[in-house]
Amino acid sequence: MAEPPDISETFLREVDENLRRDRARDFAKKYGSWLIGALVLFLIASGGFIYWQQVKEQRAEHQVEQLSEVFKSIGSGDTTSVSKQLDDLSQSGSKGVRATALFTRAAVAIQQNDTKLAVAKYREIAGDSGLPKPYRDIALIRQTALEFDQIQPQEVIARLQPLAKAGDPWFGTAGEMTAMALIKQGKKGDAAQLFAAIARETNVPPSLRARSVQIAGSLGVDASGAIAAPAQ
Image 1: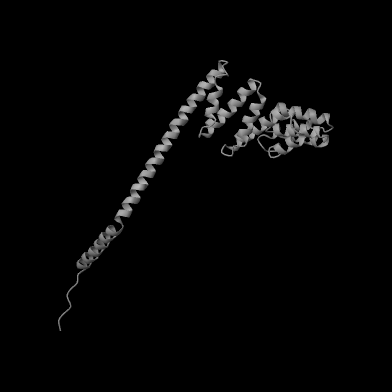
Image 2: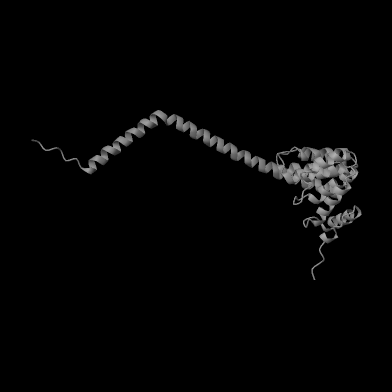
């Protein structure tokens, strides 16, 4: 009986490599054009994204330079010619540029005694969900301060309610306006307690804490103990 041929490991490896090569060739024939097309699209998309990022950065840099020129003009007393520039910059895709332009436009409007425009700009910032919360909060504070005597006390209270809480960065200012609105409503006891809370808040500026102690005292609440004596 004939002996079976001796099939070495080297031969088996060669056969396996040939099979792999054939499969790779067949795969390339079948899907090669699709893979090349996908790669080209990926490269185009990546290149386009990188280019767009560069364009945005260059545009933002130019806008920052424009803001610098605007500030120079304001510093020299020329607030008339900067209005159009600030209005254009307030449409910027850069959050920092847009917010700075809007805040500056509001400040210029106040300097020009145009309270209505300043309020509108602060309202625009406060309502812009694309801007960081700290920008929107300070805009709401400034808007409310300008409108305080024109709107109902309850609107002041409702508007500032999220900020008039101990621990909030704007508790001092928001709390003070809320307390004054409570006084307008005749709720002096609630106002006194809020002033006392402001006096106890260590993150509130000392001048505001001292004023809160005085007002709370005038409303019948002794908050003097909230101001600690200086350390010896």
